[in-house]
Image (tube, rainbow, N blue to C red):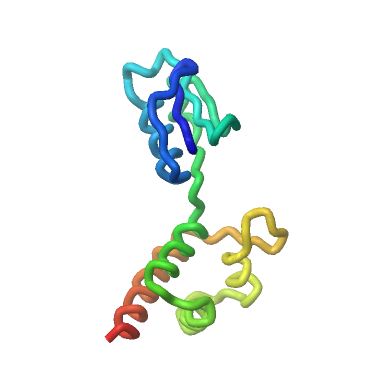
Length: 135
């Protein structure tokens, strides 16, 4: 369970990591919270804390571009071989190891960070393919 605390008091809770990070940033950005100390916890573990007045200086993201790609693939019900084939067939000039690296966990040495522009380019390609496949 994720908890957002202000000055040590729980103000919001959620089970979803991405929602928790968004709630944390939104809570800290509220004007009335500027003098307060906002914290994000996962169970008893402190994940992030910063004086609210300094929140705009930092951009902690819990979901990377690779995570969004994985969600898109699952939502569209595509297999990794299909996705890899679509990427190799596109205008992007990417090596197999780079593409494979997108699908490794962040703590794996083979992990490769995907870029926003790559995801933006591939999203309509994957979507069109999934739509055509379902008809």
